[in-house]
Image (cartoon, rainbow, N blue to C red; front, side):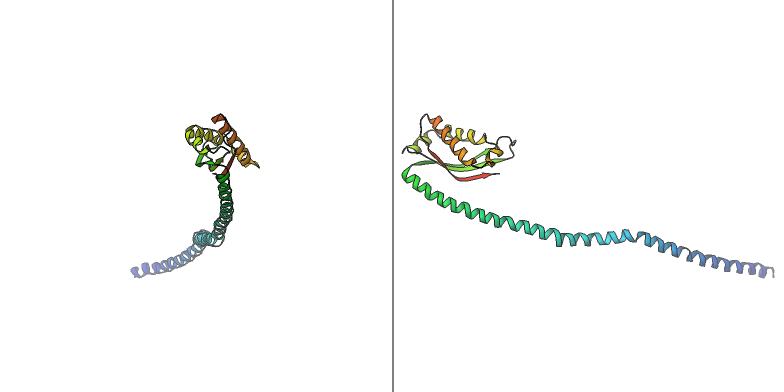
Amino acid sequence: MAAAKTEAPAAPAAKGDAAVAATGSAAPMPAKRSALFAWLPVIAAVLLAPVATWVAVEFVLLPRLQKKLSAPPAAEAVAANAPSSEGEGGKGAHAGKEGGAPGYEFANIVVNLSGTMGTRYLKTSFLVTGADPAIKGTFEGAKPRLTDVTLNVLSSLTLADLEEPGAKNVIREKLVTAYNQALGRKVAEQVYFSDFVIQ
C-alpha cells in the first residue's frame, strides 16, 4: 500500500506537470506568434525587394533608357543628313573652286585642345584654296612645315574658343594667315572645312 500511496501523490504531480506543460505550451505559442509578427517585416522586405526592383527596372528605368537611346540616333540621322547635304554642296563648291582656284587638302588632322589636359580633341579635314595655280605643289613641297603650322594653330584653340559663334571663320582666318606667313607670300586665300568634330 505504501507503494500505492507513493504512486497516488505521483499521479497528481503528473497531472500538475501536464497542466504546467499545457500552460507552458500555451505560453510559448503566443511567444512564437509574436516572434513571427516581429520577423514579418523582414520576411516581407526580403521577398518583396526583388519584386519591387524588377518592377522599377521593367516599367521605369528601361523605358527611360530606351527613350534616350532611341532619341540620339534620330538626332544623329538629322545631323548626318544636314552635314552630308552641306558636304555635297561643299564638294560642289570645292569642285567649282578647284576648277577656278586650285587647292590642297589636309585630311584627318587631330589635335588636343588647349586647357583640356588632353581630354578633349578636335578632328578636322579641310581644303585650302588660292589663286596660285601651283598651290598644290607649293603645299606638298612644304608639307611638314605647313602641317606643323596647322597643328600649332589648331592646338592653341580652347574649347571656349570653339563654342563661340563664328569660331570656324576665325579659325579660317588664322590658318590662311599662318600659311601665308610660313610660305613668305600670299598663296592661301580660303579654307573650306569638310570635317569638323570636337570630342
